[in-house]
Image (cartoon, rainbow, N blue to C red; front, side, top):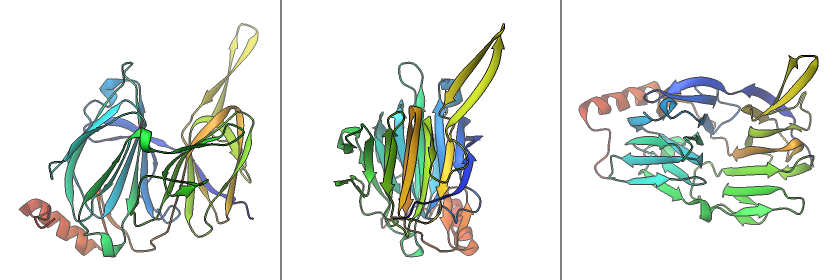
Amino acid sequence: MSIRPVKHESQATPTMEGAGVKLHRVFGFGDTSATDPFLMMDDFRNDNPSDYIRGFPWHPHRGIETITYVLAGTVEHGDSLGNQGLLGAGDLQWMTAGSGIMHQEMPKGDFAGKMHGFQLWANLPSSLKMTTPRYQDIKSADIPVVIDDDGTAVRVISGDFWGKSGPVDGIAAEPVYLDISVPPGKAKRFPVDTYRSAFAYIFAGSGTFRDASKPFGVKVEKEFQGEELNIRDLSGNRTLVVFDTGDEITVQAGEKGIRFLLVTGKPIKEPVAWHGPIVMNTREELMQAMRELQNGTFIKADH
């Protein structure tokens, strides 16, 4: 067994998308070779409805798959094919845009106004970029949860893990997508296919990964209150950890435990030509998509 060392670490950066939704970009719109086949990931976490309520109005996608995982609040979605639905807390949607689709996503907070979720983009190989669009809408109750003897809990969204199979299937990258919670002070090892890209995204608690230079997911602030020094642990600071090669990762949870997404996928290793939500292999294919958007032929009638 070989433990995967940490290849790269970074903080998600504030940005704005859609019609003015404030979110944090975990990675994307740059060199994504280290996360191939995954192109981009956003963390949309907000307690102020005015920062997200305008949502993501109608926009196109082609050549990719979008994975929306909701933890709090709801997301209403609709598309040019007439599909519509509602994602609630714990639900997931895996949309294969394929040859092209127009859709919208409108987030709504919970009773307290809180909204939290993630969107991950996965690339499609050239042979499937013009495939027929499809959806996989997964309800929270259909996502298996495995709980280990020490209290470690894993939601298996896709792939096989600890004897359970996630409900998402038929995906080109053959991804493993896990939502992992490790109790305070516990150390755990998780198997990872040696030949897959792998990253973790810490969004709650704190901890360290083997071969990491410092703790992740924790920020310590010191402030004087009179003569007393008060130290506050601010957890969930949106940290991305990209791993190098190996067949295991190890995490040591901090005092409040740690919760993170662990995602792996089979690299596609093809050229990436990118224009917003359209991802093809060549500039010529991008230009063709732009022309089709302009002349009304972007959505393929035979699909």
